Image 1 (tube, helix red, strand yellow):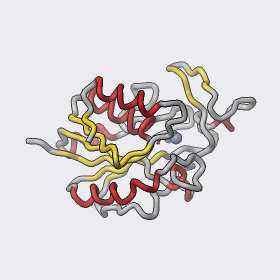
Image 2 (image 1 turned 60 degrees about the vertical axis):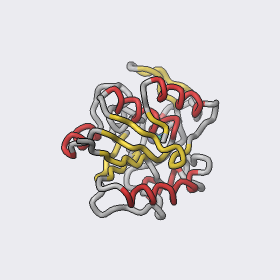
Image 3 (image 1 turned 180 degrees about the horizontal axis):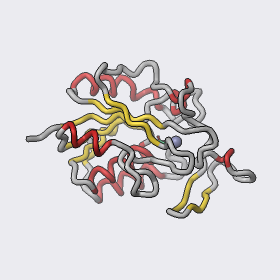
Length: 199
Ligand code: VGL
Ligand code: ZN
């Protein structure tokens, strides 16, 4: 039996207009996402949720700037402005997102020394974030992805989803990317290569 779960990625104030890491045109997906939310029985929301001094913040590394790449034991960490500080208004879901009362929430990037783009695994590729356990308990076979940002958190969640054997559909009209250096085109290519459907 096919069981689909809608996964709404990081639709938070800091990623929208006026936020600390605003994704261009992010708000325009809200009506599309709300429409999707209304059609799914099971919805999981992800929330970027960083402690002060988080490893992904340029401000945590004296002499480093936003956009710099830092070498970490498990790979490169791209440095961002401070964003989605746990418990602050910037980390809250966008007020126009229609939240089902029974939606489940996965918070990621919660450890000071580890970042997480994917809702399945932290960027060390091994520490579980929580989505896999949730999907297993829901009996999910397919995930449908919407949200922000196409080239980071949506991308990595989609790739991990395929790796774990889920059918994965990314709804293009319900996503927006940062796309600073053509990274959205690369993201769609990477997703196509592993069989992610572009819905
Ligand atoms: C994201 C950069 C930093 C995302 C999160 O949600 O795509 N991007 N933290
Ligand atoms: Zn983040």
